[in-house]
Image (tube, rainbow, N blue to C red; front, side):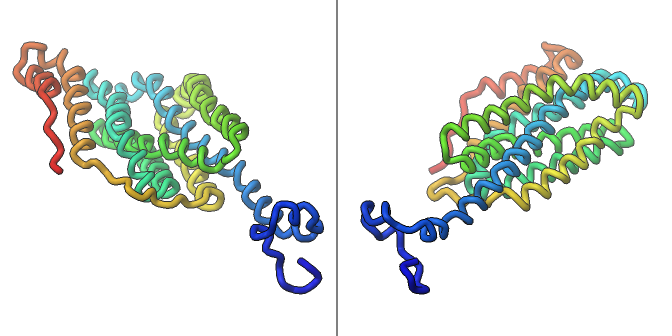
Length: 277
C-alpha cells in the first residue's frame, strides 16, 4: 500500500524501489505463502500412506498363505496366483499409471489408485473362494501401479525447494523400507490373533484416510501439453509381462516341453510390432 486503498504492484517495480517498501506491503504476500506451506505436511503424509499401503500388502501376504490355503482349500498354483496376481498387475501397469497421471492429473490418478487398492483389499477380506481372492489381489496391484509413480510426482511438485524436496523424498522412500520391517510383525500378529482376512481389511480404513487427506490437502496438477498415451506400447508391455508370468507360474505344472509353455515363451521372444503412425 502507498497510503491509498490501491495495492502496490510489487512485481512491476525496480529492485531498488522494492528494497525500501514498507513491511505492510510485503505482508500482502505472506498469507498465500503460509497457505502453501500448511499443505506440505498433508501432501507428505498422504503420499507416504499410499506407498506404505502398497509395500505393506506385499510383505504381509506371505505369512497368511498357509491359513488361506487351509480355509479356502487352495492348491499350490492358486496360492501362487494370490501372490503373483498382485505383482503382475503392479509391474505391468506401472508405466501406464505414471503416464495417465501426467495426462489426466496426478491427484486424480493417485485417488483412483487408492480407490482401486481399497476396493481390492475389501474384496480380498471378504473373499469366499480362491477366484474372488485372486481378482481382489489383481485389483490391489492395479491400484498400487497408479499410486506409486503419481505419489512421487506429487511430492516432487509440492516441494519446489531442492533441500526440502530431498528431505521429503527421503521420508517417502523410508516408508518403503518401514513397510517391509513392520509388515511381517504386523502380519504375524493379525494372522495369529484375529485371522488372515484382517491383513486385507486393515488397508480399508487407511485407504479411506488417504483419500480424505488427498481431497483436502493435495493440490491439483495441470495436464502436460504434448504428452499422450502410447496405447500400442502399453498393450505390448502388459501382454509380454503377463505371458512371461503365466509361463513361469504354470510351467512347472504344465511341463516345460508342453506346447502351451513353449508358446508363451516363444511369444515373449518374438520381435515387437511397430506402432502405427
